[in-house]
Length: 117
Length: 400
Image 1: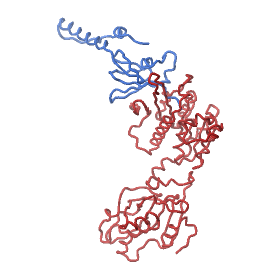
Image 2 (image 1 turned 30 degrees about the vertical axis):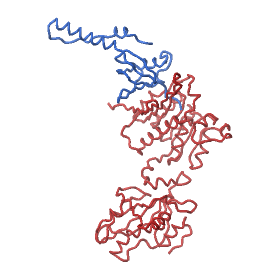
Image 3 (image 1 turned 180 degrees about the vertical axis):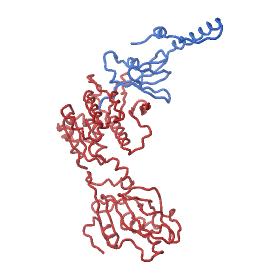
Image 4 (image 1 turned 135 degrees about the horizontal axis):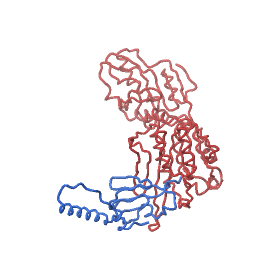
């Protein structure tokens, strides 16, 4: 399943802000925030999953999305059989089923099983 | 002088004939006891000189090692000048041959011919250090000398090995090796990874190593085992456990082959193990064994590799995993791949001895860390090797 940018944007919600200034300033400020957040969601990130390059909408990707990018039909397999690990510069980490991580351009993912002897 | 017909080699007999009190420990240490030396000005004390010892077919094997351990303090001259710079290479206390070595002595004879002789004869080597120490004691008391009764004592702890590991003696690793002494360890699954686990484990002083596997040796799996099989062996159809028990039984005793899979009926066989390695493909069996071991409080390591084809580049994308589960981290069982993976694995057609061996050795290092043999700052719960990244990932949850 590939998420579209529109889908991503429509899922966005803005947190309520405490505001002390006048109304004109408040509207302008909120517009800047919305524009900034929307632009950030419109941005695509290039990530690498099992050596293959993919473009994904940010700001994060999930365990399941990574497997889908690798061609795994996540609806028909036991996800507990899979490991998803990531490398982002010096940072490394693992995703559990249902977990997500912030993406950056060039971020690498390794997704697959480790159950053979 | 006591002529001792049981002395195992001419050097030892010569030391006895010289009147020294000689002890051989586990066939890998030679000791001359009660050697006088000066611990301080005008004082005499006695210590033991200990050398790594190896004899092959009656011939001394000094292996180029001119050093010895000494159970006495830093030696001095009769006038009180320290001999530390002249004699002592290392003053770190080390347990050697069951005795406390307080310093390691290193002193080469001045003449090359003397050094060559020292490196060929335990008799010359031990006398060299006896003289270096006792001549200062004789400056205090001319009658001071090493034990004059000329006797031999052979101390041998029961060993599972048919010949001693002299490398341990040369490195002074007795106390370290003692940490690896276990009564019973099991390897469930001796395929590619499990057989390499056995290869390393068999060389440690575990009394009994039980190996479980229901498969037989076939030509294709002989490509993922340590060593090599003749065609007759590769096609023999012998049980893997029998082949491996016979093979490693050449160097040690205590390898017990069980040509069966572990299931609900026989899982209690693992109940008296101090540690277990799980190296199997079948997820439900992994779950059964892991759950049983956790219930019994038995620590274990589960291993696994994974390989995917990157068809566009005609390359393989590979990974390996090691998970250590202890009574304190029993919840890690939930992270293990315990479901039935019926997918036709590409792995089945690929021989990957290097991944199996690497996975096994990572598991062995983690096992030895668990036993306190290696330092362990990371305290990893899971180690993941990513071949493509050429990296090891260490997973450890932060304690709450």
